[in-house]
Length: 487
Image (cartoon, rainbow, N blue to C red; front, side):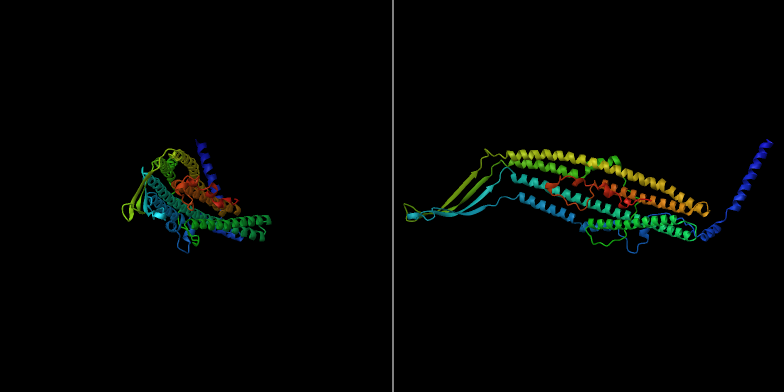
């Protein structure tokens, strides 16, 4: 037991001696900074990347999403087109129910009368009586077309709203990326200048200087490319809202919070069941049924009525004057013996079959494309959550520890710059992931309708391929800044 106690005491004394020795060898922080300055190496202040700096330093009022939506509601031409199509459909419905106009004319028979001064001259009124309720059936067809135009207008409004949101969030993401790219370019420029000073004092060779200058130039180029990207995204936003001359401004917003919340399985089902595209196909089926009903009634013959007065100049054998005014009446009806409109009925039946199949096709197409976008949304959300919760905090800690080691003269300055650069590169990737979360989430919430300059369809064009599901292309959904090669 005494030997064990002696061993413990000896160990404690040894650790205490090592601690005193290390304390004597480790200079305090002001002395380290003085030595760094003497060696022409700058001191390091830990600066973390964060969002919203452009908004904090903006000199002009910020441009908001509400402003963009308000301008789009007034200036986007597709909304006015949709309204015009509703008016046109109402006018066609009115025209389809109007009765045929009567005909008024002159009639003559043996006008010159010959040697006995005969002949007849007069006027008539002719009217077609439409039977079988054909006018009502025609009105019903155009009522369905008017309903199609109304649903198309609702869909166009949703399309424009989703497009404005998407374009606005892309501007915001490009704005945040520009701040990161500029900061990366600034820190590498500082590093290149430091390497140049070290070279002048013989503490670095020329290859280190050249490598630092190349990297600084590459990142400066990336920042300038991001400026072009931001300008492009702003022009896209201005075009979607209908004001291409709108001067570029700093937009307000927060990419990190209030993400679109979606249940992945439910999102696909909702799109396949509630999309305006499904409502349009349902109404198209109803219109095809109305077309069949109208085609079947076309075989009902219309009545053609004609009546009038004629003055008969022939003299009576019993009196020395002309016969005078005589009434004339005609009634005619066309017999549906050969043409019972059977061809048009068969064609309308085939159109109904096609409309029903189109309903299935659109539902399946929506499910297919929604599944793709849901996958993109899930991956983007996973990346954003991992970056925010795991990757970035660890990168910040690594950067802080490296800066601390550098302050204790236990790490070289290039390693600090490398750690800082890595942190900012991860921040840029985080912003790209956030942009994808927002754009895909908005697409799913907007039933995959994202093209705000797509012209609203006319009733006869509602089943044009793709237009009801014009999701953003994968190339467009990726930030253009992602094409910049990483160090």
